[in-house]
Amino acid sequence: MTPHLAFGGLGILFLFFLIPLALLCMVFWIWMLISAIQNKGITDNERICWVLVIVFLHFIGAALYFFIGHPKRLAPLKLAA
Image (cartoon, rainbow, N blue to C red):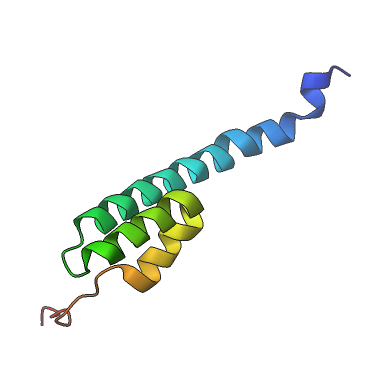
């Protein structure tokens, strides 16, 4: 058996699952970084801290910002009747 056939299942997993997952994580990371930079609801010092957390902790920092520092909606959503 040739070596490239032995890892066929891992190659398919890599192509169809891990690459899209990595791209989604990168998009989320960039989205949270931009959100932290543009957030008007926090002070300049908080903004700098959040940007540093997101930059150095990557996805974990972005997730922390999303759940802790991301601005929350002030008014509840109005559902159409």
